[in-house]
Length: 542
Ligand code: VG1
Ligand code: CO
Image (cartoon, rainbow, N blue to C red; front, side, top):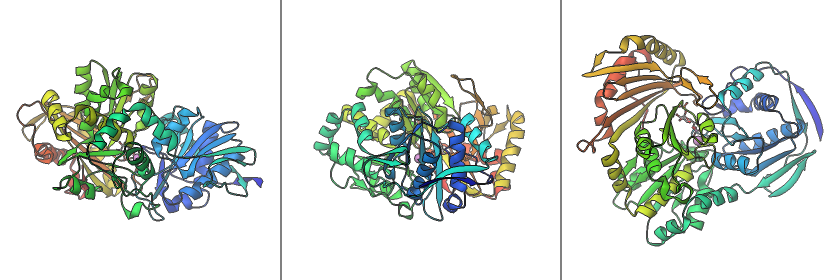
């Protein structure tokens, strides 16, 4: 083994997006690419004497990248790294290990819901000592460092045996290989009433969990089948594959279509769920009824007190700006604070650390709480199960009662994928320019009451994040939001978010696309989607 200082030059474009640096796998495998970024991480957060967690979602190049990161950590003077066996950790499990072991942070290898494989995507992100994604100021500093990097440190020599549990050494650095599931499963058991859920399963309650050939397979099998007694075969696509079986590990009605079909069939189980590549997202489906993520957040907030961990009530609720306002109505009814943050889990960290909120969520199938500092797919599934076990009602009944009490926020997101970046940028620029003139404007029989580009001032540290998405709000609180994705690796993805509130008691059972039809038309007209991008219809509707 020898310590080497390798000369390098900056590589353009190593700018982390909504959730870390994501690129094509071949780009990450290119000369110095991974090394430059990892050195930039160590240069910004420090390495000497520190302790980090390391793991990833098991996608193609995960294990090789882990060896490089470990050899660089050793050469940079890191004292100890806690690695998931096989270099695998779900994102929430990694967040938990950082907190449990009070480490100085962690490196997570994942491109989450993006497909995996040699010709697909890879990603790396850094989480802080609170377990949460690095805030913008830190990721900006990492990016800046990549633009001036001249060398990186690495040990040449042997690999760590990541299949073997227990302690090893790499030079002077300790490497502790841990089971990826054990600590996480224990955390879940400490939060929820496993006895009540197990009793429900024992009573014949049926469930289908689609792990989408991604990281949650072993977690879901251990927790749902082994600990809670759900029938064998409850978890499908339970084996994590490096290319996710060639599918999109994105838990939404489009990519989890087999699950949707089963849940809407004659033989549907009582409850269905799916999770994404790195295990932080969840989709929840009842027998014959889909739960929109925004509604799921609201229902979880309204019912969290039914689970032991939240029996004392919740401090507050936070949602990302494009997420529907359904959760705000729950917060108001509970008499707790609610917050609207930019897209991306990193914006929830300060609010969670400060104890201002307990439950957070995003419209993109992400919900979580103060138990970790990431969204957590299985956590959401277990909270739903806990609620179902206590209320002894179906998902459909719970939603119907929720809407009857709070009204319904009809909601949908339309994604237009792989648009030429210059066209998407031109569309957003023109839209931003037109905002002041839109206020008071009539369209589709509705009046525009407000139009702006969302800027967020963090209530805890005062940091400001601008240009987080265009909001067009109508007089009846209906809403159009447009922003460009920060997780894609090819061209631009336009996300169009649509929302309309109906107070009830009439009109609570419409089909969402129909309920939103006028708002969808208005969005196309106001943004000129077709004239700028050539697209008439979205690629994915959720
Ligand atoms: C998307 C979602 C966002 C989520 C992010 C990371 O970002 O919209 O809500 O936090 O993915 O999720 P964007 O910039 O593409 O809209 V994950 O599960 O991919 O880490
Ligand atoms: Co994810």
